Image (cartoon, rainbow, N blue to C red; front, side):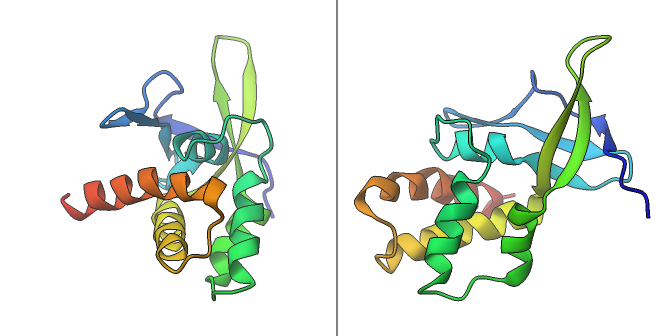
Length: 139
């Protein structure tokens, strides 16, 4: 089994997808998978910290009251690793998930908000999730 990080074919940290006033770094890998960085997703949702488990912790809390697809939780627990270079010599390894799982994350967050499962301090993360769902619905 090959465990080396996958390579990016298209995309860079400097060219995020822009939706309204929000930015979302996304990439296409050499094997044509479309992925998003976990840290980029969390920033998109309004998280300003450094932990890569912030969103996983929220999803785990929601899963105590609402069924969440197992593959969604697994994607955040064991994300794919890719390599990205910001310069000619520096190579960074990044944790990513598939783009379809990002959309599932957004649906989960919006449903949790609508069912009152997000705390007052987390309701704000459903707004960018709603924006991305509205944007993709029209594509």
